[in-house]
Length: 298
Image (cartoon, one colour):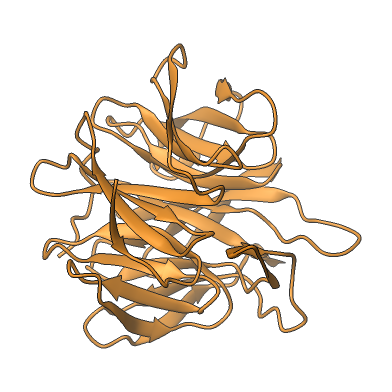
């Protein structure tokens, strides 16, 4: 692996742009930022709260899952989230214009229920976004998590799955017919059938893979062959799960807070991985191309 840059403040949500830069969030810094190929870091927008997952939408803007903020702790050079802060600002979905940094809030609730901790996001071919709400953890209780679908123009949001345990990474199969999501605390990846744009068969859930021991899952990306590549915490690395769940591989990275992976380069065989605990973005050649996104970064 080669280091692209360091000094990031808990980076997540990387997006490989056409010009070779990487747009990502810095959760502790509360920004949407851009990392240039030479490692220079530029702030695109100061969003506040806790910007988490990010994806390019059909209009070329970046849509951000904002979890509302974390408490933070740093031990032995490792930065880590540590619960919900007193200035928690509420979960929301935000739209950011890359050229100006202007942003707006699209969603704060669904059917009268607040979004508590939006985490990761993926766009389908119909222009809608699937996103997870991991919930928030407080001193004496924590929220259950949810899966939502919403339109990019702010006109519609619907709950598609509820009462999940810390749903985090989310992605689509190459044919767009299956939704994958990872649960952090259980270390499991689930697959559900998509029956129509923005609609899941709630009875179709299948456990794609579960990890033994104390290993946690974060965000994910899917490659062109349908393999689900999940950032793995504690046993820091990327876990690669075949579409049938029969094969599970692990690529170690050396950071217990390995949180995200995305694919870029002309052949989509360059992987970019966020090592959030140590504030680094690294890159490596991948043996298979990543799945081309429905809306290509410009």
